Image (tube, rainbow, N blue to C red; front, side, top):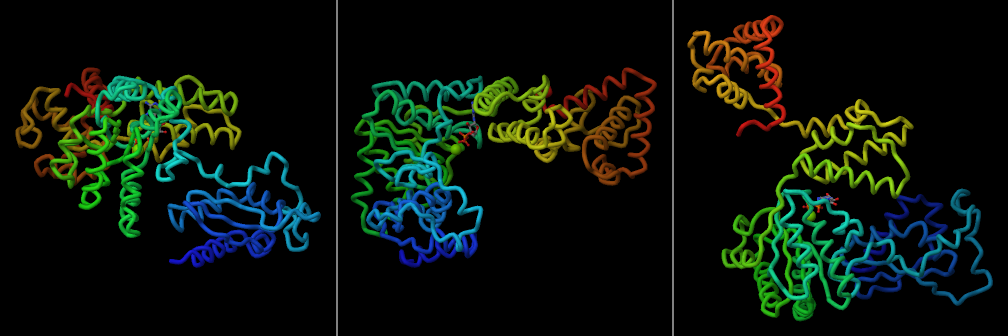
Length: 477
Ligand code: ADP
Ligand code: MG
């Protein structure tokens, strides 16, 4: 794919998105000047057009070019013509739609000559790293039981002047803060030791760079680039599995850095020994330093994170009235991961502000209906049978057996009742799971327990306890 073709495609996409008139007003005279070091250079005739493009289309342009090639990490717009008196004239008003031509860009909108500020920047120097998220700092990271080890290790690595654990291997499920911690380390090192060269990138990007270097027979430069860093962080290393030559290169890079006492930090969604598709010697070497895992969050941590995020949101956007109970409700119900938890809070706040309604627990439930449903644990009939048998101290087999003795028949009815209440199974399906009983037996059980709940507070309590245990997913084991 030649550069000219890519440029043609970017233009075509812009034209399709903006419409003929707008496109002609601003982009018709834009020329591609060339590409160097991942910088796409565009030239326009006047400073005015340059400023307009920069302030209105920066993100879009950067994105379109990045879509062509992930290596195009910035777009610069240059003014090709010498400064001429008419430079501040707007493009012909008749070709520009009114709303576009009307306000001249304010001085504040006229950003520097480059679009680079549209593309968040990480390690400008190397050009191979990925951008750092400014929100992912240690200050913004809430520590709880599930992540305290990973957090402490990350802090140590960020603050230490000598290399303590090498590599530091952070692992845990998706959305639990691995990337956040890595960025926090990078920010901290930049602050404390600006002279140290820190490189953060995803394993995928690492592979991409390497494959590209192979294709362009430029592996020396590739090696140089990586081996000259003081701290190398590779995120989501599980994605490196499989590709033999990349693994090999990764391993060499990794060894070279460790041998030279440079800090390496790796993250993955599972422990080193569980990484499938990665050679044994690499796996074992990955585990040589400190492997710190991040466990799923508990209720307290989730609540703490929500409080911190709510506070941060208010600092940025002004006060929001979040009534008591709402954060607790979210912490209780959104258990999947922190990313979803954060997303849920944002959605509720955004919804309230958009439709101008106060946040209430009811509204929260309404707005998050789908998310809540997917976070609801799926309770199975087997689980219900097991719990009920345990609770009444009968054998699990008796749930399925034909025995009619009250001591086993009643618990069996309770289990059928709960299966009807807590699962979406049909009556015949439930019957089948209880030793192939008829659906009328299930109907009978449901009626019976309903009756008993009215009449017998003991049964009422049993059913309630069991239900809560099953719904909360936290029982004695
Ligand atoms: P991972 O890389 O493990 O998939 P991320 O680091 O991307 O997860 O975290 C997902 C989101 O949750 C991010 O917005 C991050 O800031 C937030 N997050 C995760 N853990 C915490 C925490 N302990 N305190 C504050 N925010 C957190
Ligand atoms: Mg991540």
